[in-house]
Image 1 (spheres, rainbow over the protein chains, first blue to last red):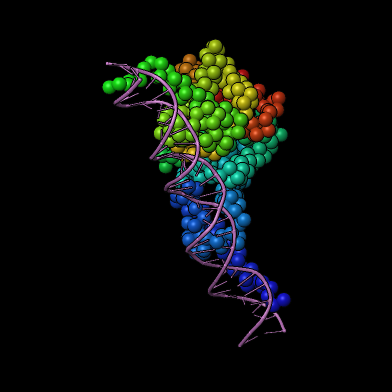
Image 2 (image 1 turned 120 degrees about the vertical axis):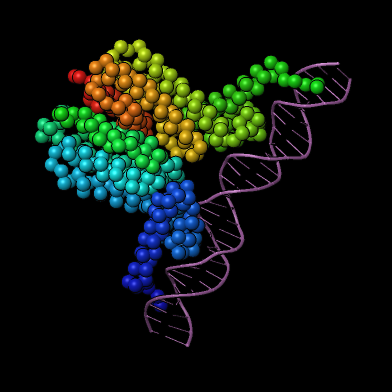
Length: 199
Length: 199
DNA sequence: GCAAGGACTGAATGATGGTTCACTTCTTCC
DNA sequence: GGAAGAAGTGAACCATCATTCAGTCCTTGC
């Protein structure tokens, strides 16, 4: 037993792994999933193609993690913005504004995360992304129903539908690169009505 | 000039073309887009692989047409159901019921049309599918706003968001193969509130 | 019947890009 | 220093299909 990996090596491995994920994310933000060959990711990360496979068993595993990372970042930002608000109406408005604002900031990435055709195995991860948003919203809706701010409804169904509305309404603007000035306030009004926020 | 294709041949060609489209649709309804290799489609249609290319320049062209055909059928059915109703509220309810009912009838196909990862060129066709629904709904919303049945709103934005909500709410049930009993009425209530249908 | 030309065939081709692996380089520990 | 073994390399491999094409079969009009 002449070798056992030490802390320093572990740190380097982990750094390398992070660099690969970051590289994949950068390429996705620039060229979409379509531009993400393993070779391209490896080159950008400064490692050999084969080295990617020391960290991830398949390309799908790598991108599942890339999606998870990126999604978490988005959901966290949205959750942070919403948490500062006191009423369901304000919380939901914050969700829409933050979600849409960030998406328009990096439209290519947003499109990749939301709608771009990807490997089926990676697509599954996208579902959990949307679920995370839905769960966040479901919490606010449930609280609103409990407090009487909102009329009775199934928070699960409501939040799922809200996420769908939000995502669909953003796809057009994302393709165009910019949203019309009325889009975001219009969406907020739509969702407020849908939740039954009293005017 | 010893040969010029006659009506009989034209009819056979067109029948062959239809058979290819139908075969693609059947395979898609059974195994999804993933199972739709050109060879498999050709075999099911009873022609040689190469013959597919006498009718369609590329696989993407074939499936663009398959999507268009299937989508048109869906949109027509929904439009027909909605046209029988007099109020926006009833029209929208008919849209949701017909859309969801048909989707649950052929979940694999519905999933392929709505959400399954496909070739980017085919994906574009999916957008027109969703657009067709949105346009249909936008017409009803605009009429409702004009008549005062609905509060002022941008029919484009509203209808896009409604389509998103509808599609998203169906993805879960489609994966499960069945919707909970409350899903469809719940969705109708959600959308009614979102449009501002007075209770 | 037959010549002209289209339709049809399906095995071969080719492009893509994920994955592997024989080899090199680096780390550890005695 | 050196042996053991892990990490890293990248060119070669390979599977998958979409696409092609040389050859065959059919249809037409004389």
